[in-house]
Each structure stands twice: as C-alpha cells, then as structure tokens.
Image 1 (cartoon, rainbow, N blue to C red):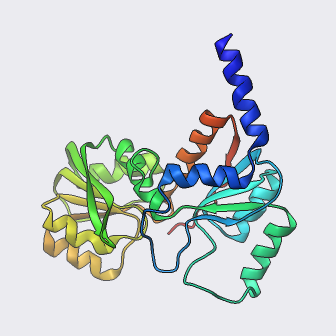
Image 2 (image 1 turned 180 degrees about the horizontal axis):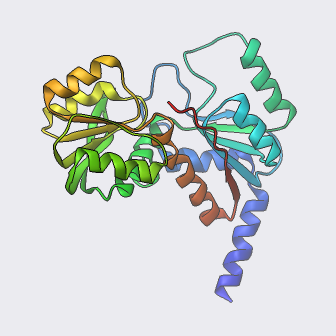
Length: 265
C-alpha cells in the first residue's frame, strides 16, 4: 500500500514539474550558486520553455546535432555539460541564432552544469571515473579558481599500459599514455585540464588522468616522472550527465535519453 502511494505521489510531482521547478532542484543538488566557474560562463537554467518536463535529453555538448537528437527523441528539455553561454555577451546571429531559434520554436528548454558537474561528490564526472577505475581513499585534488575541482586516490598496483587498457575498456575510446611504470596513486580531473599535471607531480602522484592536453604536456610528464593519461575530453565527461539522468529517473520517474555525439577529442 505504501509503495503504491509513493508511486502516485511521485507521479503527481512529475505531472506538475515545469522547468523552473526542476532547475531549482538541480541548482540545489549541484550547488550551482556556490561553485566558481570559467569567467562569463553560466551554470543552471539557460533557456526556459513552457509546459511540464516529461523527458530530458542528456548530452555532453550543446550543439545543433544534439538539439536535433533531442527533438527526434521528443524531449522537453536538454541537460548538458557544455552549454550555450560562454565568454560573455555576443550577438544572436549566425550559428548561435540558428540554435537558439530552433530551441524556441521547438519549445525545448536548456540547463547546463560545467564545473559543478565535474566536481559533484556523487554524480560528477570525476567521481564516475574514479568508480570505474576502483579508486579508493578518495580526496579532493587540483586547484582551480581557489577550489579543488578533481579527485585523487589509491589503486592496486597496475602498469601505466594496463591502466590505459582498463580505461579504454571502461570508456570505449582510445587512451593516450605518456610515460611508463607502476601506478599506485592517481589524480583525476575530467575534460581539458592537462595544465594541472604539475599539481599532480607536486603532490607526489604516480599518474594523472584528464581528457586532452597540448604538445608541451608530453615533455612535462616525462620530465616530472608523472605518468599522463589522456582519455578524451568528450569521453571523460559522459559519466556526469548520465548520472544525473539516472538520478532524475529514480527520484521523479522522469524519462531521460542520452544523446551521444562523440567528438573524438
């Protein structure tokens, strides 16, 4: 009887939930207002719509390809990691206009969470990667903007090559391994955070995992004797949006669909 009442209660919540109510819940869940992000980036609700939210499309990137996928999947809202508002004010023209006008025409709402999703202790990109690698004794790591945005922890001893293969199997995409040797400690910051390699080396970590890097990070890795694993910007940031989708399904019985559009970068 109690389970039946709970199902009815959750169904009523879902039927009455619009994008403003869902955004408020996500703001609190992801600590949107407290986390500093890149200058002029906007986390949280980016485009309002009307009506109830019955299905959410989950994507790493806000782009025309994922917009079209969301429309085909009959989503009312998109939840993305990389949203449409970066770098301050700009004219609504060209590709920006094409995407925005499509969203308005299709009554498709948009919510974005960048660093708040990377950092979340349960649903975040870094936590998903840590769980996939069975990292233990977790602690925060990697300072950016006066806050720790990544994780570090311990592994059962594994070779650099072995960890690269394990990552490829977990993520389903290629992993570039720079350096060699045994790995017992690892730092993780998803996405494009190779500039934090120096912090991993200073912390005495055996290895550092991120998405992508530049040419000079190769030499920095070799010279600092800190193994660098580059697993792809896109590939290292799929876990967070999927975790939020699972959360919405479990908490509200809401339908979600992952809108996969890998960049290979």
